[in-house]
Image 1 (cartoon, rainbow, N blue to C red):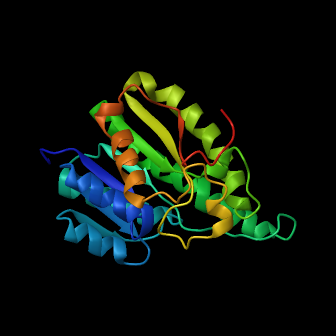
Image 2: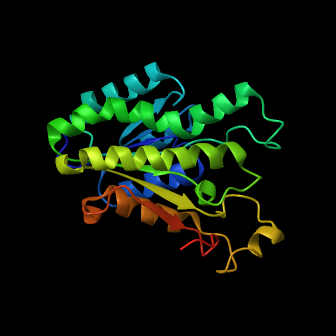
Length: 234
């Protein structure tokens, strides 16, 4: 068994997930990284941990990733769930199939992984799950319709899960990023942000690392905005 705490990043091949994996590894954790592109496998190996190629849409891939982590490390202390970009378009033009695909991308990815790691965390009597959501979860943006709809649902799932398992020292929280500098900058989007700029990806990663760590041990069931003031609600 690893002497260090172990964090798995699902969807960690690029963007926020990849930088979060690097940030967590720099803080002394053993790391496992999975993505469908192969970049996650390369990054996990580069970081001296576990690299794995698979899709968070495929239960068998997630099962193999979790099993490989237990074989290598003997424990799983944290999970960071990231997602790719699901279907977009006008809200009335999205097909039934694309709505279902959006649910797979933005909500079921978390449900699937949680089912697999929960028994491990229960045995360890601790665990932290952090889901990368969106600023649009509570203020829907027409540019991201399926993301907004299903990450709003994810907030409900997160609260139900966190309330049920808080007494077992197992936590779940969502991070709600605004616009990140890994995306092309658009003037109209910058104009909406009180901070006047996109976030640096490391600003997200530091928050994610805090939320997956024991330092945030009394925080659960929350949706933490990291958006430079982009959203209006209080």
